[in-house]
Length: 278
Image 1 (cartoon, helix red, strand yellow):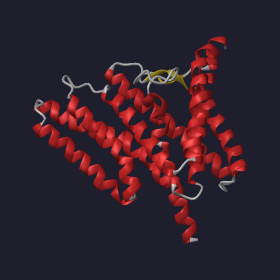
Image 2: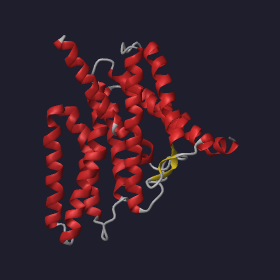
Image 3: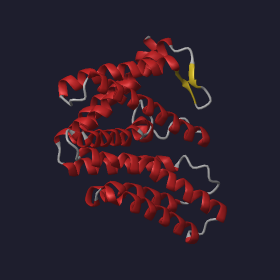
Image 4: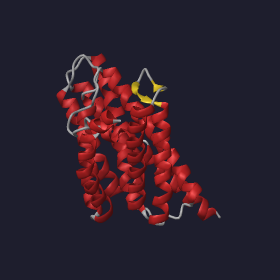
């Protein structure tokens, strides 16, 4: 247990500074600051994502184009709305192929590069941009914090339980450090936190509904974590970066958030349709 605590010191110190900042931006600042924060996170995450490329020849101009296209997505959604989702994504793909045509790269590298950059926008930029849509929903800011809180509880307790009593590997080929025991401990912690969060914040989801939603977030978050681990395995690196002490890079810190954000958005939209139909 002492090793677990010493290994988590940097995580705790980093969280001490990051968590209040995130809460302030999401819950108490103007929507523009959430837009700015999401754009900055996407910019940093895509910069790290470019380092996961396995292309024999990297294109700095192509990397910059990927980062620029991804970082622009939140602004497109903020000013133009959800209807801009598909046109923005298709425009980014079009730009990547144009770069492949005239960027001077070998044809094989150009096709792989276009596919890799398209994946970056679809995998990182668009899912995180759903925070813009969530913020505009009823109790949107508190739903965003709910997602963050559940994922933080999952990650923290999965780490503690896994290091303490973990025996059975969850996905040994992709992420040898993750265990079934850790995953179960994290899911249980997220579910418990969700119950008290709903009672305190008054989201009105009900005990069963909020716990089920927390479990969905936890499972989808684990999938997101493993998805990034798969990319890192392919690139032969341990962390996407070193910007955040105790957590690695920005992409390492947000990998569990990427898939749950749009998942919660569509679940809430589905519930609204059910209420309207009833």
